[in-house]
Length: 293
Image 1 (cartoon, rainbow, N blue to C red):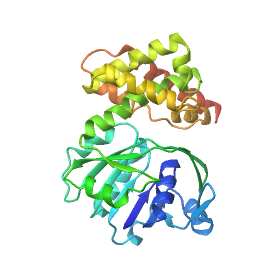
Image 2 (image 1 turned 180 degrees about the horizontal axis):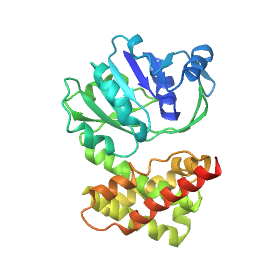
Image 3 (image 1 turned 90 degrees about the vertical axis):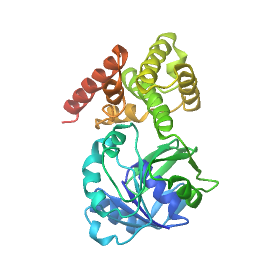
């Protein structure tokens, strides 16, 4: 297959490297410097070096035909990318983002190609512009937002060492991931702890459980089941630093708007704990921006 991967962050590098072993992958990066590095040095994943074509995202005209687009940029960059991509796609588009903001604007537009949304369960850490560390092996799950193509795509892309699985219900799939993110990401960033510490301290666990309930109620999902899933993820990633924790440490923009912000926007009743972590992360982000000036 001819696959265009947009985004040179951790997930984009991981997807391009894993898929590039079996498919014709072109990776679109934010900068020409990164694409040149990848062109010269290849993509490094553990002991593997995978050769893929890389070019800056501005060079849309050089891409030609493709079988699928996989969008791996952060939510806060997605709208601008989408405004360009929807004019060029002419093939199925897969969105691999945290949060669910993109589903709101995608559902009100009309397309003549399939739109697929995904949930990434892998852990990945970008080491430099051409190197990614696979920190947690799991799966990518795909579901149809429009048309009926996700299952066909899964059958073409799924490999034993890089599972890509089909899900029937996109709202359940993305909602379950969002609820876990709405609990783990802001709390670990605010308290500067690893994921596992959320269950090691009764005070943290109590707050986490209420955040889970608020998010589950807002998304119309069953709270007990969702809390069990959040606990499972915390235990499975107990030694990890969450992505939001790392973003705050590095003074980067976070995805709080597409995670806790989505819960606030879709809640039908007050969500005071979600409000607290939402505004706390906004405040910490501003504080870190001043530190890095």
